[in-house]
Amino acid sequence: MVSGLISLALGLAGAGCKSSGGMGGFINGGASGSVGGSNGSNNDASSNKDTGGGSDAVAASLGCGMAAPADPPPVADNHNYQKFTISVTAATMSSYATSSATSFDRLYYVRLPDNYDPSKPYRVIYLGPGCGAAQDITPASRKGFPFDTDAIATDAKSNAILVQMEQGFYNPATYNSATCMPNGAGTATTACQYCFDDWADISASSPIPDAPDKMAMEKASFDALHKKIESTYCVDKNRQFFTGYSSGGWLAQQLGCWFPDVLRAQGNVTGGLPPVLKANVLGANDYCVQHPIAGFLIHNNPDGSNSFQGSVDGASRLFALNACTGSFVAPPKPTDAIPDGLEEYSITGVPNTNSFRCVRYTTCPATAPIVFCVSTDSQHTDTQAARAVPGFWEFFTQF
Image (cartoon, rainbow, N blue to C red):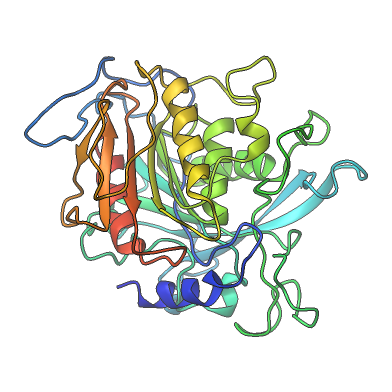
């Protein structure tokens, strides 16, 4: 089910990459506006599942009623994704201080649900891969999480638009060899690898590289992308989601900060909250939009590439943002006692064990739940895919 993805992740896991990573996650969001449902935590002891949020009204996008693009045709060897290009004018972290905003072409890939109906508003899941070579080089191995083939989350392939985001050819991984082939050329073993402009290496004391005249790269890119998807396909704007792995996991925290009024929920496997965002959480210089967003986090403890604390910091930010009550507590290892304020959470088909366990924060509003799964058997390799995909899909479909 995930062998191709796991092999790609294993190839990158030991590389010590900048945002490290090997494969992807998901993403997308909804329209601005308040979320549905009533506040207050849900303590359904029979399932430990949050049932709030499902009363969000369907918000059909401008693309409803329009025929989906037939060109370029879906590629069977690429899991029936279509490849598109979008132009973005932005500044990268490395060029922000010295250069003006620049136009970049960004690639993205779209897989429509089976038997796509252009009059039916669909959920959208944006997928943010970890650092890696261009998708075209390894077409048979999806870099994004395999929502279209997962054996448990089988409903996703028929009921969600999947949009894989591609890292631009502007932010090379720090572990690239001096002889790697740039800009999407070469083979899986000779091509340069790239990361999202995820701010993983920006210090907490640095100015945030974003301004009206020079928008941050990933902020500008997603702003253009979600609007393009909404205007091209029939999207339920209140049910857009993002998932990311490694560098895409850092991106999940960025997009959850910038677009909580577009995304209904964010999900990450590894990654972390960029230090420059953490330093300003809920302060006078908080860069994030103050709007609740549901969150589902998965991280191995320990993780030699992306510190486990990075996801703890991300969960702590969501806890405050979502107006959860009481004090935030870090999620325990699977064999440790569960502290007050948390309760065990189960993913259908994915048992909690002595090496993997999920918990839910019990004092958060039912419309903005937070789930955190901790493993001790995965390090930074993405054996988590078989857990993340059904977990994320189940979490998203409650809304």
